[in-house]
Image (cartoon, rainbow, N blue to C red):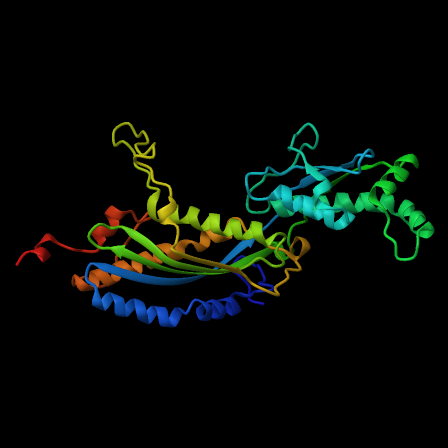
Length: 366
């Protein structure tokens, strides 16, 4: 019921429950004490732990998406085309699942074909974490249109079938075709603006807890454990959404720790333009212990099929990595006699971490 500065009323806000749940499941209190004990016993290797709650607004008004569904009479297979762009986020699978759900047909008979603007023009963008949701909404509408056209034929077949028998899909399609039913449907999803002039239709919530270890002499970082609890509503596909959370978190790890842009001082040309100088995350950067879970029993009435977006919110939640590293540096600086606030820019590269730890060469001489 709280209202944000821009007038959004927070509905179905689970962040308090989630913070309590992850504090317990991640053993945050006990691990914080263990980190403090480790730091007291080690001078040149330090650990930090950070827990961050995130509210991420999702708005899909002004971003229309379309879908066309066509059924082939020869084998009953379905060709589905939507206006989103599949870039590994599973949009094709989610749309095929939506059509399978409405039409009560096997997922395997649905084939998603590439997006083309000569078939469905004027669509919005695949971005802002809303591409999958908007295309699923258009798919649901197109499938429901087709189902409504097939309903009279289906009722006729059911009337002559044995009690309790199901209508064969291929038989239904062939009889519908013989009756002149259009077996191609198309739909357009264009969401109206949210109420109260809010920019968002709903909010995704997550809590992220990261424990990091740094080598004060080299600046090397190891992510010992990362726990994430994510509110995905009723996930459209848990396997896909978990993959999105994993990928976004590792993408954020690169943003916060490794991917530094440097420019030539005279020409302004990008100097970090190869893997020798530009360092995206690699296998050894992945958290040693990576635990992700989706919030249970949390349907989102404001989303598509009660779901929530899973693309960009975890990227925002990856900032717990940065704060865990900074907490470790605070411990190192305290041992060096440096107390109080210090600025640290992202990415926190090994060179910056080593320098911020405040270790002087005089420490190694008698």
